[in-house]
Amino acid sequence: MSSDRELREGAATLGLCLDDRQCERLLAYGELILKWNKVYNLTALRDPASVLTHHLLDSLSVIVPLAREWPGRAALLDVGAGAGLPGVVIAILRNDITATCLDAVAKKAAFVQQVAAELGLPNLRGLHARVESLTGSYELISSRAFASLPDFFAGSKHLLAPGGRWLAMKGKMPSDELSQVAADIEVFHVEQLGVPGLEADRCIVWARKQAA
Ligand SMILES: C[S@@+](CC[C@H](N)C(=O)[O-])C[C@H]1O[C@@H](n2cnc3c(N)ncnc32)[C@H](O)[C@@H]1O
Image (cartoon, rainbow, N blue to C red; front, side, top):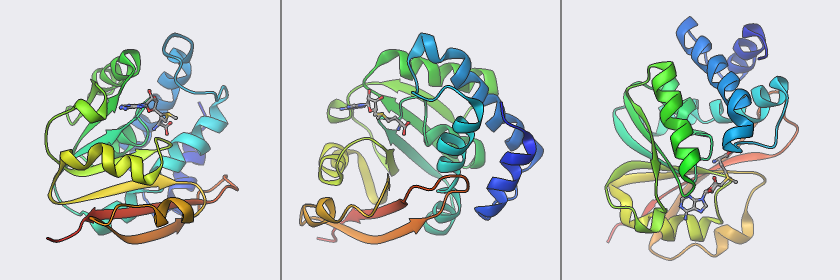
């Protein structure tokens, strides 16, 4: 796995000062993704440097915006989390957030359960279900590379707690998708992000239910 120093420097560029435990857990998580990739079919990436930039740093880019938007305790549902991105990274950085990484593929949810056990993260769990058929209530619902914005909001609306927020990680500004969001959903902020080592465009779309 890439070095501690690269991770810390990348995180610092994102405004984060990682402590030793967070750094160790993030690097161990990257190693677990690569170690179990063949068994669980988790990612197309094969080398540690790409996992560092495209998965760890990319997911770390939401932490400062999330602290601004939701500084306290929360139950978070990460929809279509795959290997646990960004849910596992959020669980490592925010022990006041309980992160449920949801995936329709059983072995991906099982991988996240294994990560929770191996890294000793009581605030993380992997859950196997389709979002449309899940029940429950979450203050935060996130996704990365999951679905179009209208589909993401429609598929998870029944799970958002009163006063809750959606956090969608997207590539370049999704103007077409934004124009198709249902009228009962308010997109209240779209922020562009820079991820160290990634040339690609990144943004976060924040949304909530319209006040009745
Ligand atoms: C492209 S992957 C993204 C994984 C991860 N979020 C990432 O950024 O690396 C999308 C994931 O969504 C899952 N998925 C697709 N439809 C789903 C549904 N209806 N409910 C839950 N998960 C779903 C797939 O199994 C897949 O693992």
